[in-house]
Every structure is written in C-alpha cells, then in structure tokens.
Length: 458
Image (tube, rainbow, N blue to C red; front, top):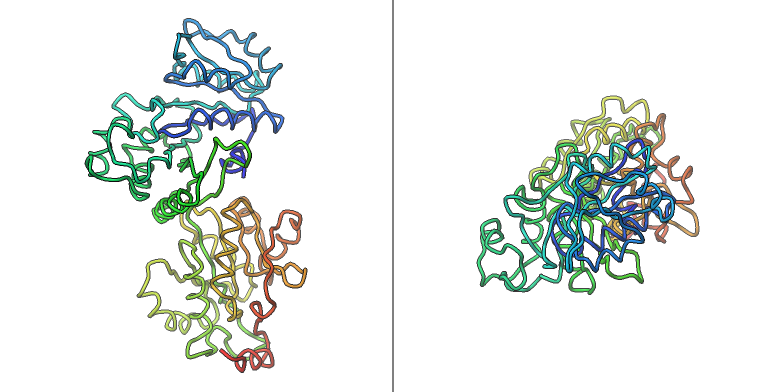
C-alpha cells in the first residue's frame, strides 16, 4: 500500500492537504516518499520543515528554494514546480543543517495552492535528532494552523531497548508521560500510549485535523508482530494507525492499516420463506443469532453490531447473556425492517462508532462461516483492499464481505430488499476475493435448506 492511499489524501488544489509529520523514526524519509508519490500521481507538492533538516537530506528533493526574510519568491517557486512537480522550502543553509520556515509561511503556501497548482504541503514539524522515539518539549511541535492531517511516528527499532538517553530523545519527558524509568524496556503498549497521548503524538493537534499515527521500521517479523499489538491497542481506543517500512525502497511503504472496525450481523428479516424466525432457529444448542454474534466477535473486529427487526424482543433476550459478557457487542433495532434489508444496512451505518475505518456484513443464516474466514477478510482489508468478499468456485459471493470507509456513502444509498451486493458488483474490478469452501457459505432460507444444515454433522 502506498502512502497516498493509506493517508486517504484528497488531491485537490482548491482544498489542499497540509500534512504535518511529528515524532521520530522516519519523518524525513516519509516526507520525501509521499512527495514522490504525489508527483507520480500527476499532482504537485511543496515540502518543508518548521524545525531543521540535515543539509544532506536536501538532496532527496529534486529542487529546493531558500526563503529569505520570510518572503517567498513565488515566481521562482512556480518555475521549480513546473520543472519537478515538487520543491523543498528552507530559510537557510549551514554546514550540517538547514533551517526550516515559519508555520505562517506554510499557511501562506496553502492559501496560494490554486495559483501554484499544488495539492499538498508536507511539513516535518518536529525534530528528533535521528532518535527512534521522543516526546515533544514545551516549544514543540511547530504545527501550522492549516494542517489537515497530523501524523506522529515512532521507530520500531526502539522496541526491547532500555528507556535511556541512548535510544530516546527527551528521555525525562518520556519517563513522566509513560510512568517508567531507565531500567524499563520499551514495549508495544508504551509506543501505543505515546503516539496517541495529548502530550505525545497528539500534542497541539489542530481541532479540524485528522490524526494518523505510524509505527515505522517494521522491517522484520518480530517488529511486525509487535507493531500489530500496538496498532490493536490504538484501535481499541478509537484511533487508526499504519504499520510501515518507508526506508525499504523495494516494497510498498505501508504494510498494514489498522483502526476501529465493525462486524455487522444482519438479523432483522421476517423469514417468510422459512415460515419461522431464522434468527431463533436452534443449532447445536443455541439460536443462530447467538452463533453468528459469537463468530463475529471471534473475527477480530473492534466491535460487533447485531441488527434486529422481526422478533426483536426475542432476539434481544437470546443475546442477553452474550451482551453481558462483552462491551464489544451491541444490539441495534431496525423498526423499518419490513421495507427490506437495505434498511438494516442503514441502521447499522447510523450506529457505527466515530472513526470507524471499515465495516463487515454477515447474514445471520450462514451458521458454518468460521471465524477464520472473517479474520482473513479483515487481513486483506488491513493489507489495503477496500472491498473484500469470498469466492466460491470462481464466483464472487456477496457475504460475508468487508467495505472500507470509502464506500460508506454508497452503503447509505442502498434501497430495497437487498444488502450490499450491488456495490460489490458495480466495483467488481476492485474487489479482492478470498477462496472459500462452498460449505462455509451454506445458508438457510427454506425448511429444506435448514433440514440439510441441521442434520449436517457438527
């Protein structure tokens, strides 16, 4: 997955993105790699820093412009953008470091985005002296008011290291923030806490800016595993994150995306063809709705929503013991269930928690769907697929399926007695499918189908 997609940037000079990179462990590399991706996508970008940048790193940009006395030579900047698609702004060059620009300069560049034809300004807004971990001092970070996306980074190379001045910039502040000392070794939970803390990665975040932490330097299997622990912890708190290895030029920079996710069990139908409520049919000693909810909970989504409709009180009663066991399970009633399945999709969308990154829909009447399949579908989404569905004998199936937030608006526009299958069909070229045994997707719409399922060896 490239940074451009993972950052969910909308490249439009009339509404330019201003990306502020803070923290430690790969800010400069991320800055220039993102700029290159923007240029490759046939857009323009301005890069800069509001702190300092090593003079040798300036060579990573194909063009730079020195800003003197807080005045930009707009004509010169335009020429460099015409030639290279990107340009780095600094205010002074010294032997070892270049001085950055003021945040007001960044804001002015953003205001002139239409004239310059730029879609993004990317700013390194924090210094870390090349350490993999830091907390900001009182005067840091230096974030422009125009920032639309704040991206704090940590370097996974610090994992397992002692929390000392050899590995951490501003180590005393890290001690105070995390409640640790120099004898402590850094763990994934430390990184997760630091990245989202109001005095850590989230310090001075503009109110309207999006927030996207990055766990960088996932260059080995142990580092990736540890990063997943930290990413899961942040997702449980409602934060998205990325796991990356931006310095590895031979592969895409983003390995996985994480964030709050929801699995939705559609259990509102009237079961007209069955002749009795499918949600309450007993299989192996429990109602199908309880079986589906347990499967969804085991499928690694942050939260599970069960949408009820017909026989809503009975469904609630069946789920009551499971609801008492976990805060991850929620019941939503759809009073318009008779108008069709699309109303249940809408009821679920209205109930999604703030910041939900993706949603997974599964019907109540597929009792053989294993948690393994749901987990694989989520793995494909974390790897960058915006639509994920099962494939049986070469045919894409409509459920269970995952929909990235890019499709939330389309999900809200569904109508009639159908689920989200039309979105998959309309965007079939973008659907990543998972080969699935037909048995796993066996469903029960009629008494005959239910008899086969009920009599199948459990």
